[in-house]
Amino acid sequence: MASSQVVKVLIVDDDNFTRRIYKTMLFRFCFEITEVEDGKNAIQQFVDGNEYDLVLMDKHMPNMDGVEATRTLRGMGIPVKIVAITDDASSKDTFMDAGANKFLLKPLTFSMLTDILKSFNFLN
Image (cartoon, rainbow, N blue to C red; front, side):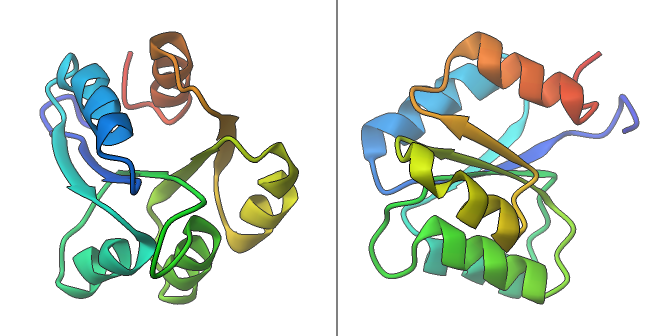
């Protein structure tokens, strides 16, 4: 990724406090951040023509869960990097089969986030 390009991140989680924590961690990197409360709204972001480099996707949400949203994005041909972040360890295979690039268990720590960003070459 070119160093002059701003990384665009979509945070998808129904918990406002969790979204604020992720946003606070990501602000350190001067990323462009958008947040939505469920998978349905995440899909709508892409339908509306918005592009993202990274999606941080929760599993348990109203309207459309993270697994269904991930599967839908992949079905639309969206190549965005999707990181599943949940407290449900048993959903790893389901999330990965749906098309997630990485799977992490909550709570997401700053070092976990940094490792993920480095693995996708969003950080040096």
